[in-house]
Image (cartoon, rainbow, N blue to C red):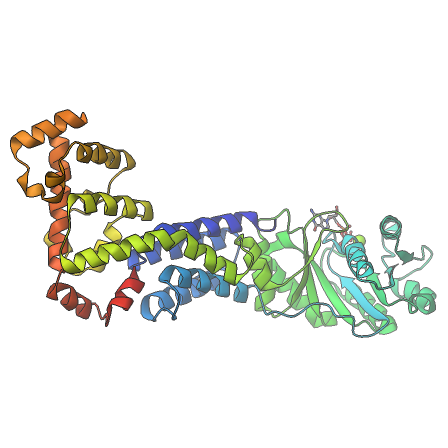
Length: 453
Ligand SMILES: Nc1nc2c(ncn2[C@@H]2O[C@H](COP(=O)(O)OP(=O)(O)OP(=O)(O)O)[C@@H](O)[C@H]2O)c(=O)[nH]1
Ligand SMILES: [Mg+2]
């Protein structure tokens, strides 16, 4: 899979967003930082990365979440769309509009031109076209043999001329024969850099064959340098598209892809291996879906929904209890379990103005797995009366519970303390207070309040 590292760190980021109970400013900032880190390690231009993440942040913090989506789903959707845009527009496939259709591959030394010729030949053969290749690299004696061998391996006719003095001679010699094919793929010689001579050579070949596509082959490992190469080759011979090779071996693929998008040089294919079938048509949206490990946008959102559904129900319940001010130790147990699964409770607390002023240590409300288990043992040793009305808990009762649950008096007291803190929060939020709070936060109705969760 291409750009595996970028894909897996973005998947981790999505998972993180799903786990959070709420997405408030702090969480959004953290997620945005994760996205930045992931894209920068994939060599995407820093300025682009910041522009992209700022747009995501602004939309999440300042704009309404579109109807029917939770904030988390919206985040995933924004990320998906922004990534797809970063990688360029859709719809730049090579279309065989007429026959013969002539595709010239150009590029620097070792970028993968010859290998890609045979990959393309196989690609179009599979789609029913009669394909041939022409090897015009007259510079290295082995170059024409290489394409001939590749042609044999995929059973595609290949035209070469080892006596030719310059590239255009090969075309001149075989012109009549190659024009009988549906698709003609022309391999050219590389250079260390694009110089006047290479430019002249390419122009001569192009003038003779009248190519329909001039495809620049770039090795993905040049990262953002793809930009300058694309510009130079475009000035020289008018590039109609790019094929990025070696995308299976480089961490810089994100740089090369985004650089092509900036220069508006459509990436038509990506090479993902040495074998002749290791070529993929490039479609930004499909590419992003696969990178994020999802089928498409719809399935992606479904997955987010599935992952958060149960938790959201529990949060809704908490909201109801907050409204009517009823809250027992049993509820505390349930809520702690639900919320610990989703991330720190402080996430919810941060949403509520005035809570900070109540001096509730945020960590006091977060519990570790082990602590939760202990609280369960303690609660199992309590009577129903004690669970529903913890105010009846006297010193003797606490000692009895500690003994019965195999815990200490301090631990039982800790549980009661957490319950009281929580209840205080509930009380502040109940009745008119909640309405006032919502008004202060600019929330018009309960639906909107739930959306923030
Ligand atoms: N892993 C991997 N290797 C590739 C890919 N494309 C090409 N290569 C390898 O890159 C090397 C150079 O490929 P060539 O096709 O000979 O490159 P070229 O541009 O024709 O080179 P010159 O003709 O010397 O300019 C070969 O070893 C290929 O197997 C790819 O997508 N993935
Ligand atoms: Mg070559």
